Length: 129
Image (cartoon, rainbow, N blue to C red):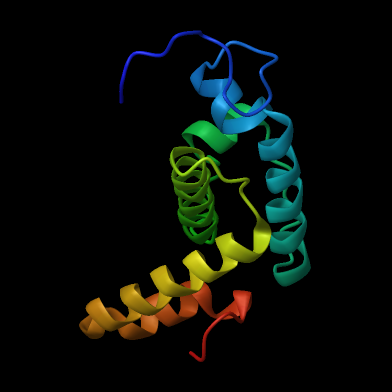
């Protein structure tokens, strides 16, 4: 990170670049979140609609199936971070490629817990489980 000449957002030049703006409110990022949530809802029966607080800090439900959702949201936030650092617009296609890579890596690393990992991600149907 470095000191910027202006507190304005580098992407939209409209708002001050706060954590909430950068992660959730910037117009390009809002589009990504809409797509990410819609994609999740087509793959899972949960039909979620997280607000900015839940996106930033996690979706807190007393159901263990939301472990995958919080991991999914975390990877999406990481995609937003990477895209902004490379002065690119975050996109669903690039996010899904990153997600697939992370899932494959997790399945390879957690070999003793393969079934648990497979069960967590199977309904997203990204990789062969």
